[in-house]
Length: 115
Image (tube, rainbow, N blue to C red):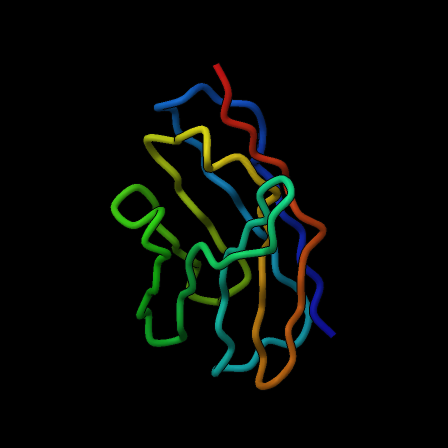
């Protein structure tokens, strides 16, 4: 089993920055992919960014150039640095672990971008 706990969300003004963190516990394989997803109000959950074991990253076009996903070497801490936040970045952000065919999710952390 895998347990994920996100933190770092909150209220921020447009143009501001936030750093989300995710603490990962449980059985993490060397092939595990870590990622961040988000669910804006009234919309379905969408990919924000993922990072593979070899360090390769993928970003959604909507956040590319404004966000950076990173992790510690043990894959026990996952981060998402978001800069130049926009109103449309408002969402619940979820940490994700993809281990083989299984997906594990955290409880989510709310990010609200508002003036």
